[in-house]
Length: 319
Image (cartoon, rainbow, N blue to C red; front, side, top):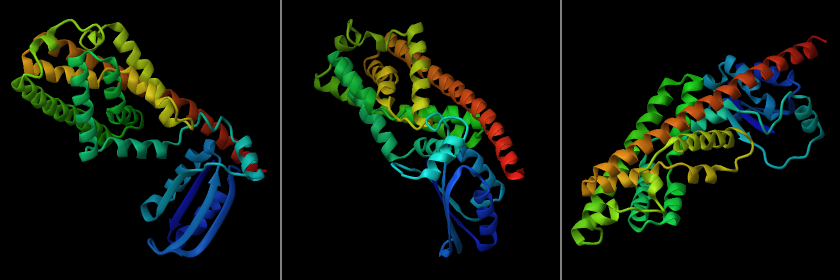
């Protein structure tokens, strides 16, 4: 169940209430005249079956509510309502499978923003990856994978392609590229310092490392795993079930590859740079492709569900 809180000017409030009142997916509806100070007007609140949220939001957008007011979309936790249960039961599809595109797009913009926090997490994760490679430690590699924030902008690229948001694509791409460049640069500087202090030797970078060899030895499985992991990650982000993201982070070799590139630059190890660069490109390409395909399938499926639901609503209203 999704809760909508809408602040609108008085001249739009009647139309908003009419849209919500006539929809069978709305289980509760309230209007508070004059309760909104900014923008001046009314506050309308409604509980909507998750499966029908996209249709309701699209109808509100058609009224230009988002231009003249505010629409807040919140996922409800536990709730008790017979009318809510009936609304969810009558709405076609499953609430756990449904995609609330307004929420997905908002999260994509939010998680693809290049800011101090993103750059810091990216740098710290890459530094840990560099240490993991020097020590040939799989545990530290996993820690670096989980800490890395790069899946946000990678998923945002898929959202941008499916929803045709050029601005989002440019933002996510810039964040991804600049984030890796900053992290690799800082890690390279740290590796040069470690080399000058005698803490890290070239043998630690170029020697055979059984536990972390996969970082600089990409193959077909790297691409396949990236596709499967990204599909699972996108499903976790778009559905009502958010579990599984930790497994996605551990499955893809992006941050460890960046750490190895930094070490290769610091010690002039060309083979390490080439192998890890290819690994990084394969993983990111596979994840973007999988994200786009997964979201495209979801959009196609839910477009059909929305069309079917529209016919049901039209019959109900007409009857």
